[in-house]
Length: 318
Image (tube, rainbow, N blue to C red; front, side, top):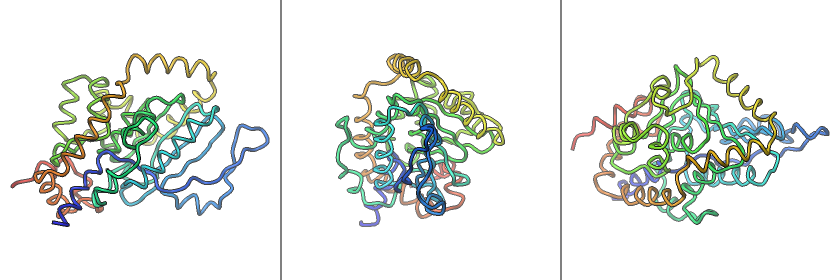
């Protein structure tokens, strides 16, 4: 019974996010446009989430939790801390999210943590649980947010990408999915609110209820991502776009984004019900049985299950 409860947690996963390390202390240089890290380089390299201030206007958040970029409640808290910093800094114009882990932007939530670790988290400033709170606040930042996807972005990885303003993917190496329904539970990080507005109702149902993997090319065709670029060109393109935006007038950026948000973002009240449905659904015996089967086959370990999650969720037999 304990084993099954642990697995129920598994998907306390699907709506959470990454980040468990403190960002390096940084200080502005005399010009006020660049920052210098005060921590040793080896310390920055070991962080599970690196916050880098490339300039006063352009920041990067890099997920660095090998081998799979799994995230759990501690990482969600850290991401919230980073979000607090972005909201508090009047100079930030653009934030890029990327990964330093080969093959994975973000695999999914930590499915082996006790469910209470997720359900017991204090509500965020919106009054919602920290996961839907983070997604809502991320989508409404004054700064422009860009996600660069190389490798797998499943569950909460996909949900973070959907909450951001723009998504760019490696044509050869990106894989996006909302696998949760295939594992017997409801996605919790807001994809039911974001995807229909982004790709249309029919394609949203295909992505969410079909629960299969989408490569970069197909994701681009559906509108799941803005563009899929050749892998060798992805980093330079995203960096170039971020620097271009960072060079523009901040007032024009903020006011334009505010009006786009008004026309396109889901209302806040659509977010919490998804999380509540997720928590309820992961405790169902049917979901626990499916998750248990996936764990026994190698879920949350490097290998074929994590690389081909869409295939394995469809192999379950009672």
